[in-house]
Image 1 (cartoon, rainbow, N blue to C red):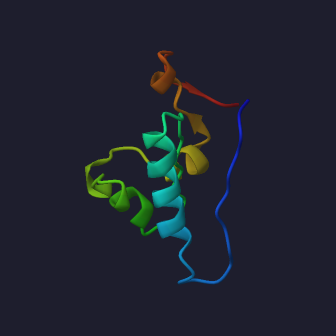
Image 2: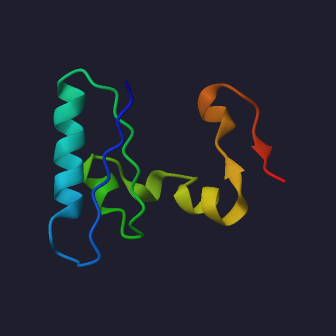
Length: 82
C-alpha cells in the first residue's frame, strides 16, 4: 500500500528539511521506494541528498510554471497540458 508522508510547518528553522532528508534516506535503506520532492527554492533538501541543484536543467519550477509533466521520466514523449 502506498503511503504519503509530508513534512511541513510554516515556521522556518524547525528541522523540516533535516527530517525529510533523513526519513527518506532511512526508508530507502530499509528497501522502500521513496519519492523526495523538494519545493524549497533554496534546494537544501536536494543538496542534502548529494545532488547539486545547479546541475539540473529542469526543476519543479518548470512543472508548476509551464504546466509540463515529465512524461520522459516514465519513458513517454514530453507533452504539455492544455
